[in-house]
Image (cartoon, rainbow, N blue to C red):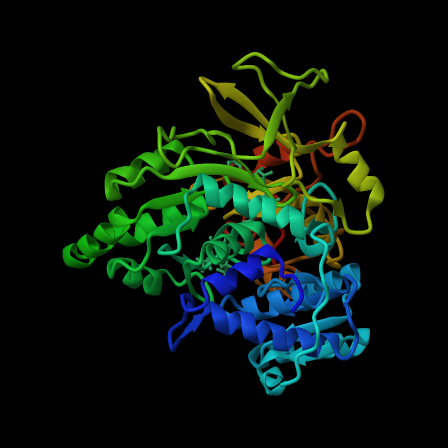
Length: 515
Ligand code: MLC
Ligand code: AMP
């Protein structure tokens, strides 16, 4: 038998433990290990090694998802998890950009990718059909420095870019968290976060599998089903974005006494509750502690680096801070003047070095080179160190928006909206939002005397953008605010949304022309 990647090899030592606990049945580590070898043979299709071919997969969280990912790795491929909420255009972009050769999908989702595969000439595999495969090929020996995973991230470019991690990178990310957060085989965690992002796929899924723990997957963030399981003391660990804690608090507040008591009790017994992917307001940290007795552990990370900073598992968790560097992660702050910040209280850009840092942006060598400063990855996030704890102060780019934990690119949304025949110009910004952290807002200038209604604009956008990227606030303006150089000034655009009236669809203000 080939020498296994550590994550997969470890499954043999947890063989009879339950890895995935789904509605209808549970799946043991041994089953995932055996099935992924059979699926890997199908993927290999007679060849000896996929040689880092990109294999995309559109599969909800659960047994099939893990089997597909491990099969791709064991066959020597790079896995490219696709977003379940992506539009056809977005799927097409990812498949094209990653130059995927094959898509693995569940039967239920086959229709979403069938035509795309035909159009792009890609092999389409329905995972449900593959179990008949009996022959197990010899699987390739894998060097850990080979590419393993491409996660797409939006940001300062108008097109999402693929972040390539090697097996070594992933292992470093997992080991750091398993150590810091003391993952144990008897841990159990619900998985409701999307698996095309590092929070769901590494922090929850891969760390749990590494530890031999149990994952309970939910096909989507189904608040009531999750709370029912919390009330029956099903979990020891819980990981979510701040928006989810806001939504959970709102739901619990609306409960009757008995239901509320059981849910609060379920949360209070967990050994660890974590928040990340966006700033957790200190007020939410405090109200959650009052409600459940749990001090949320806030940590900071990014697709390119995995997790970098974390409040302690044991020790003081300070609201409004992201703690200290995780094991194996080096952090420095670099000032606007280019100096390494040595004094507490002085702001600088967070720069990160260590084995958990990604290897490259897929097929974007210049962008990769520009993202490093003498071997340190430049996060674009600003922080200060205050009494030994790091505090995130904001981002360097006004074009990045964090909504409900998703990183969105204002430039990407603008580049879609500008294609609307009635839109002459537009500017997209994030505005403060109590639930989502930031809400996407679009200021638009219409062509001539064009008329436009909100419903039409929304449904037009839905065919082009994942729902969570669609602006929640719209405003029609005569012109966009610009500086002396003619460049749109985003802070002034944000200010437009502080002024009531004139929101397209919400109010027929003086500057909007509605159909
Ligand atoms: C859903 N909607 C959103 C949204 N999520 N709008 C803006 N921002 C979001 N994040 C839309 C829905 O499409 C819907 O639109 C309306 O809001 C209400 O939906 P909902 O059903 O109430 O939302 P829900 O499905 O519950 O989703 C909320 C959520 C989800 C928080 C569970 O957004 C989510 O999974 N976020 C996590 C993203 C994540 O994992 N990020 C980690 C990136 S990695 P309509 O029009 O139908 O009303 C990273 C690194 C790190 O950041 O440090 O971890
Ligand atoms: P992504 O590119 O989707 O991986 O998102 C990474 C970004 O999320 C970081 O660059 C930060 O801007 C933000 N982020 C993650 N965790 C936190 C946190 N705890 N507080 C503030 N911002 C965070």
